[in-house]
Length: 458
Image 1 (tube, helix red, strand yellow):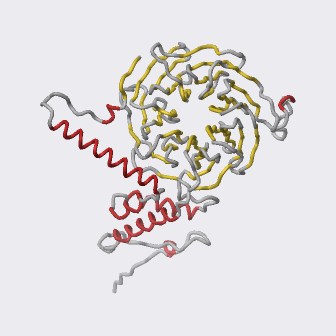
Image 2 (cartoon, one colour):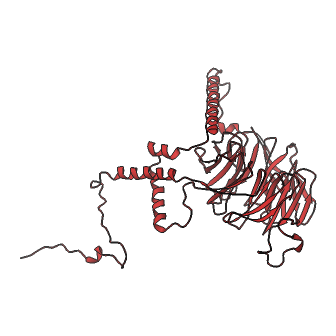
Image 3 (cartoon, one colour):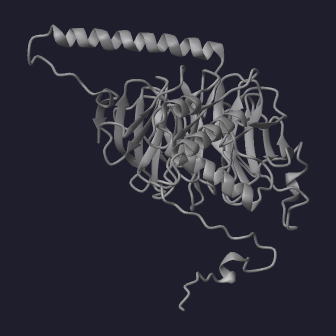
């Protein structure tokens, strides 16, 4: 008699090693799991609710200033050192993780410090309305290699390594990425050599009469310099030829600019018309993207080192974090005591954002509001990645999308956004009626991106 039996290998149903979990077998046939989709949607809803529940972005503040913080500068090749300067002429170098002062320079300038940038190594450049550019050695006696200048003195009474006098009050400064030269912004753009006390070249346009408010060297092609001015212009210079190459006149002036760290031809502008714009310098006739959210002038901007996000600070007392290429619904940070945000930067690891405001505080925020600080185990990391994938997959669901988009903002900001929406809607309706009653073919409606740039000169 022949008998048929089912044979199973015991090794398939036992752990491979001692301590491993028991293996489980699952049948993935969808007919056996009719509620799998509903179960996954509920997990996605819980995940997005948990994200909003644990969104506490404020980490702490770096104290020390008694006046408005105008500029912030992140030290290259460092995760912790950040320099800040205020309107009373004081410069402080902070250790952000420890929240302590590495260096303090009271009275570094007479009046407002309007520009701050790091040169190579531990040297710091600053400029102010006292018409001076000063070069500082930020090393202390504890971290010097024994060759520190003895004239530098203690932190409180330290003297600058060099002073570069100018004829005009300076508004901004930036250092070349590799060469010992730097550029300053005043009524003209001047290029300086660290070994000379006078500028080596003056950069200006033949038809330009503006005051330059901000300038930046390109991160890839470091001989290219960009600036924005008070007469609504955005200009590109080449320090090799010593002249302005491109000049663009916009509807309203830009207050700050930042080059993308991953796409060398992309530049970000923070404008007085509440918006931010990204331009491709190969085609300056229109912006590649418009970012709308602020209800007052955007005063500062900075890219994340990854190039996928950027932060902006506004006159509306909010900090907003944007996804590159997505012009709406940014992350909004605010506190009760924070005043107008005049400076904002990312840390070198892209995990935190630092902002300086009119109330004299430098605040530290998480780049992702719901991120957990501290050590994260492998199991917790896997769970967070699974929740992220669920939110991304179900983001088009109406209920999940509503929870994900919900933000609590201050009442004045909310009222201002409502008023702004009403005004823009009235303007849109008026333009539609005007087009409707015009003679056929008299004029064509213009896309919004085409309205930003008024003229372009080369």
